[in-house]
Length: 237
Ligand code: GTP
Image 1: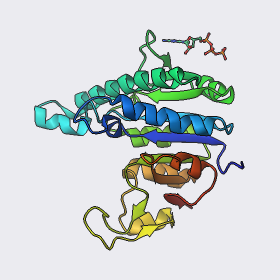
Image 2: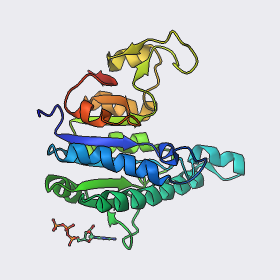
Image 3: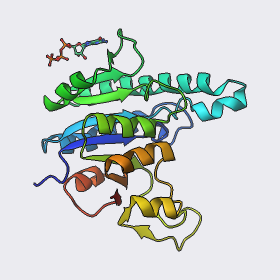
Image 4: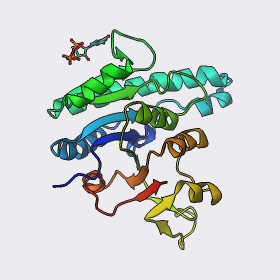
């Protein structure tokens, strides 16, 4: 089976880890991710994962609780570490080799982020899970995905979501929404399409890192994207 992408940065949202719960981590979702990831590891891809934390805490929502933004963002970063530990455990229970890396030093539970070391892990076939976002407040986990993808020279960012790509209008609000199979960075900006936040998106554009937005909840989709089948929406230069 031919690979379209060899070195991949997979972005998983924290929120999707909830499954049908309203909070926390669904074991069923973790297992789904492990199954999907297992199918591509056997193809010989090099994989790094950035995981979000929205199932536990979202920095942006902090204000409503009277918590200042930067403080809330740090809480969100810690949430990504909890998710990272859970994902690591499930991937390993399914026979995969992993290293959990944190952008905020907490060496008792995760390796500190050292770029060249993370790259060596990936070259050795270990799945590197990047947690704690960028380590700085005011940046989303999408920005962490864009940053790490650039740092490790990933061929692509695969953004696993609940929708099967990018539409001209919100498909949940308009039944006539049209899906793009491919779209340029420029068009995403000129049409105001939602792919990632702008900080993350422009980093990908400036460094020409393609992004594929696809529905990761559907079995086999990750495999289809990686092997070049038409799936989701490809954003490229
Ligand atoms: P190689 O040098 O390629 O053999 O990499 P390695 O990761 O196997 O070597 P190392 O001996 O550094 O790591 C062994 C285990 O300890 C791995 O599971 C690492 O994730 C873990 N580890 C290494 N450094 C740290 C750290 O600072 N904190 C934590 N919590 N774990 C670490």
